[in-house]
Length: 511
Image 1 (cartoon, one colour):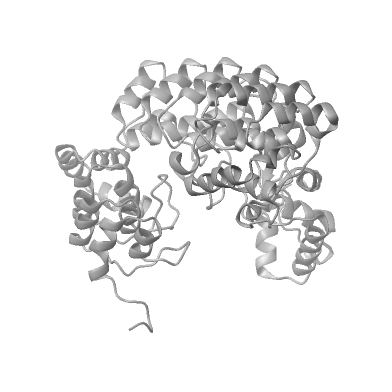
Image 2: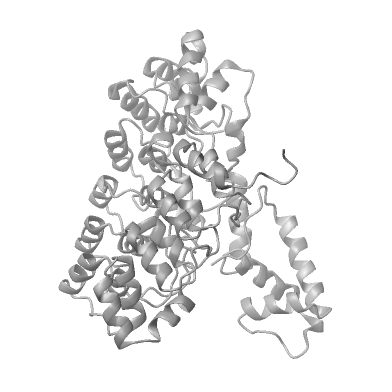
């Protein structure tokens, strides 16, 4: 798993400078640099590090950024130079009406996405109805087949030209446009067919902010993401448009689509992608460009873990029915929210209190998990099963202490996923109501408190319960340095704002 984040505008010279700096630091005996070498170099720290070769420092740096080798990193940077895209462009207005229309009409997968932008785009198009006549990118975003057909007939090479405010190719503007759900499917499909016939690549994609995996045309078709369905919806005609692209050769193994759609239990995207070979093949052209991308099988194992932990039984069943490995433990590097911690899917299902999923996996052939008092205690707490808790505590008195040691941030996960009674049970077991953790995944990463989560989600009942149990409204999260009240305000949750304002101390220096 990478420990360094890719910079906004990566270039090979900056990485060469970083590698030389690491080489010099190791040669000088810097403790931090030596620790990096020990962690990431397969040969460890040599007896005499004063002569460390630059190639060794380059390998360490590449692995810190998540690449298997320095040549793989160099290759990736070349791919970024060709396919990288800066999401900050979505926030910068432009003077040209056609370009501004494109900017407002399309998903950018930034914090600016949402219906207000698309309303502005419709208003701008109404004020300047002719802005699509000479601009193929605007014509694509507006799904105007007459304009697109004429512009391609005049200059067929336009289909491959990057332009508009984002320097995207025309088909990308069509697929990422959320201009108006009332635009007929016939217009959208007609434009897509025109461009594909003219040579548009059905696997077109960009590396948003220089990060893998790519946001492809399919990613734009299926939509969704961390901001939710309202602000990052699917294309209004996603099913027909997705099928058209898949028929044209788009690879169904689209990691960003899988990520964006995993937060909701709907499986319609998976059903379509499985129809076209999801989970099979070599990963397509993007895997060729970026060998460090996950394989199709690895992508689906990540999906299985998420579905097991987030109580998505229909998705678990769908994945199992399509041959996903549900017996083996999760091992090896993975995203922070999907670690390779050696647990099997059945163990994870039991640990998270998802008994029906565990029973299904075992019935399908998974090995039943062996006895584990700590796992059983946590699972009982997450189910708010008082009788099971009492039994486990009586039979295994040390289980509570070990559970608190293993899962110090469990309160945050419980606030996000479990019945409200679980919070009281955990507090009675001695779990810290003000502990830091993650609400989106059951991993020990100190991001926010349970009160941050409830405030940001507008959950009044849960917020009241947490305050009653001693949650501190003045604690600040570790990512944004914000209080629960700040979260409620930022996420437009007036009910929890009203609840938290009277109990939150004003910022230092305010009156």
